[in-house]
Image 1 (cartoon, helix red, strand yellow):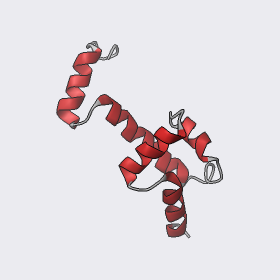
Image 2 (cartoon, one colour):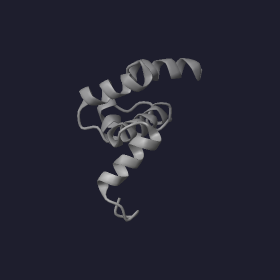
Image 3 (tube, one colour):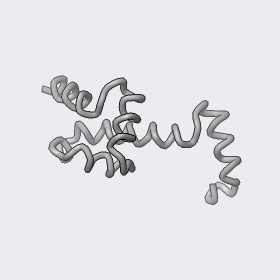
Image 4 (cartoon, rainbow, N blue to C red):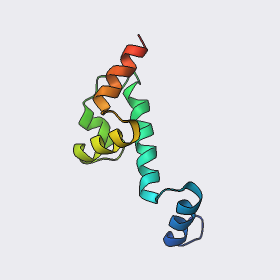
Amino acid sequence: AVLLNVSAERLAQVINENLEQSFIELISTYRIQEAKRLLVTPEYRHSKMDELARKVGYESMTHFNEAFKKHTEQTPTEYKKRMNMICL
């Protein structure tokens, strides 16, 4: 908001009106997209799930799992297994 020279409230309003989602939902979407990308990246393929959750901004595994399932309809572990099977 500061870089755009608008108030936080105005920025949130623009996001809500144009993207039809809240700022929190927007951030969650980007975090889960990044988690999905990392789950299939060789460097993170063997990482612990809590490490990956922290890497994308979640301190709580519960919140990470809930957000991931909301966006993908599967848990991070299910997604990882499915993607590994597809990539074989």
